[in-house]
Length: 338
Image 1: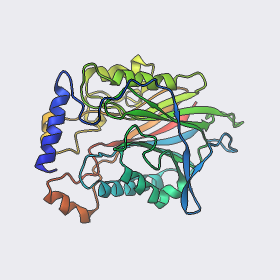
Image 2: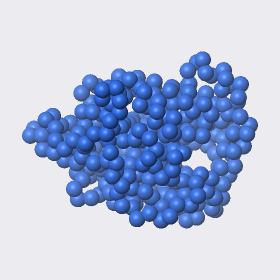
Image 3: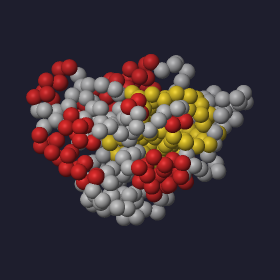
Image 4: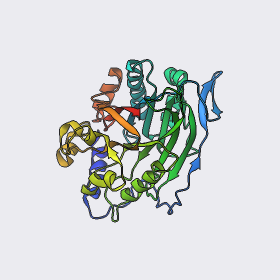
């Protein structure tokens, strides 16, 4: 990381420790009414990405899926190089998944260039539907979220809910049509999953509690059999540790026996400039929260020490930049519908 970039990151984090943080990303957004904003799903067919109708029925419903969530730092230099390496790594994760286990990939801090790279990946074209192929559904054109949904998972609805935010943040929801693990009759249930990137830094008042409440309201709707939210929750303050319980959600890491302030749970800090790590330590920013009739069978960190291609590293080293794909670890979880 260059000296200039390091200074900028330090200035952002100093602001995060202050009683209130100014907006470093985008002019203040108006208070949103939190109404769902429907989106069109996209599928690659006949040499191009096309809008498709959501599927409402399926012959063989799944009762399990694998979730992968990962934040790819949009501010890091050589973004296209980093995203290309991230996609190559994700391709390997997909290849290693059990053949009959469908996968949902949630990505945060995507840029317009990232979306283009995703669409050119052969494995994505063959196996996944996309929520976003451009920035038209984002609050701004700088960065946003996107979800890749295994084609074997029928989808009822895709929509966004905009938060009250200074940083273009929202919740991207996908309603999956699945069945209970014990069901032998293919009876459909709705599993609602949300990809989100909550407000960064500290502010007074903090916006993250209200943002989690907006998500929880959607997940707890009576028509939803089970709900899940995952992504970069920017959990950097003490109150962040209880937001899941205050909204009747379970924290997968804690439910599986994990403990706060343990190295095994940290997802940010290990892959940043040493000066940042020494000053601010490591944190569990990224989480998987859930409710309803779902069970998380396992949770593990992914994206650990994943670097850009060897041929690109020297250039980054010369610039003083970190060679890791991103500053976050990702998470991978296996979900069962009960």
